[in-house]
Length: 227
Image (cartoon, rainbow, N blue to C red; front, side, top):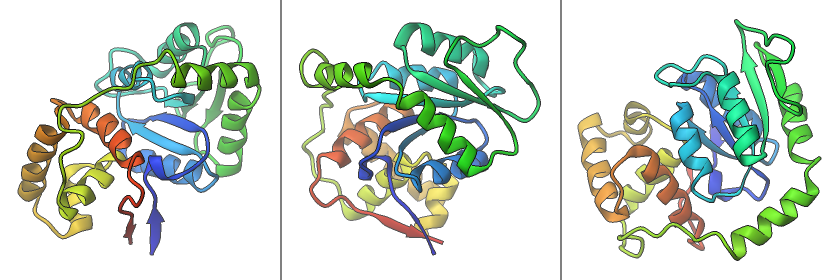
């Protein structure tokens, strides 16, 4: 049995993981979470930028170059993140290597196949050299950043709805959630419709962000052991 802990349950720096392939996203998340990082997994550049604008105090971004369904590739996303958010970025690719000068200073590149020790070392290298920013970021989170409020934030979820929410915050698809909980995909969709109403959101990305905030505020959030 392998334990998958949601991003809110770990004490380490929060890392935004951008990978459109589900298996690669799960593999990279497992590598980072096993070393203490909190991972927020998304599939597109647009979702990544939405997360960065939500005030979750992300310390680093790990992104693939080829992002299906995105208007930006990983190189373009890295430049935008570096320029607009001053956050360290690690770019991953098994097909393309960056030309000289294509990546901004401080952005790291790693070729696939990715080894855990190398990935962790690169992520730490873009997180730890920023003590001043980390301190300022903590102050900003406590003072000037307004927390996102959701209309149904205080409504009670059933145990099954909370389990679906936990798996949603891990970046799992409807099919994966159904398989993990022994449900049909249609039943999962019904639970998601209810969750969207309770959380007061209209998209899967908004639900992920609202779920992270909701679950992080619980004293005893549910955890799942998945084989």
